[in-house]
Amino acid sequence: MLEAVDLAAAYGKTPVLHGLNARFAGGRLTALVGPNGCGKSTLLKAIMGFLPASSGEIRFDGQPIAGIGRRALARRVAYLPQECQCPDYMTLGELIELAGYARYSLSGGPSDKDRRLFAEALEIVGLADKARCQVNALSGGQRQRAWIAMVLAQDTDVILMDEPVNHLDMKYQYAVLGLVRDLCERHGKTVIIVLHDLNLTLAFADDIVMLRDGRVAAAGPVATTVTPVSVERVFGLDTEIFTRQGRLVCVPRIEPRYASGVRPGVVAVSA
Image 1 (spheres, rainbow, N blue to C red):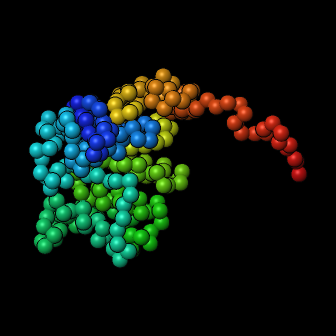
Image 2: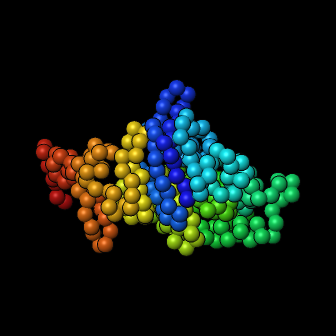
């Protein structure tokens, strides 16, 4: 459905992506992982056309995405950046209505069908009773689900998410990614998501694209692509990867002196 072909992109004179090739299958959750500065967020911006390609291209259903108009693209691809802001006065319901701009003029407003879609998006993320609340008055986990609801209300086939769980505690990381997982399984969405935690990737993603220095170091199904060899190649980290209770787990090997417990020179005192 969506692919990058020999893609190169730069910020000014600083190249970031170098002849990158990647394919993203429809109806699946693909995680982009790699060290800081490797090009994960840049790839999403290039897909959206926010950063022009120096060479190569992004194709959507075989068509160069550069030839798709901005509003037409917004009907097909939704994007959730790392940082989202809205005015203090804006309610959740007002925020969700903004998602329909690609389907109607702002002067015309949403149709009854659009309003049903907005209500369904809030229901999916568990915020149907918060429509009249100010977005900035919601908890951190609720706000993140609110932004996901806005993306859902855009009603696109493809959703791009840049570190959507980066500032959430463990409980909400799993809750949000469980919701994202449902978007693929129950709603047929294609999701491309930037993640930093390999264990979250192993738990929720179907496929993975591992980036290093603006290039694809490894790509494919998570179960066969995330190996000690690929993790060493991408992160320079020695790890053990094993199955526990039916799921893969990645554990870095660390020096014994860094392990938890009583360290040399530390005296354990019992009460």
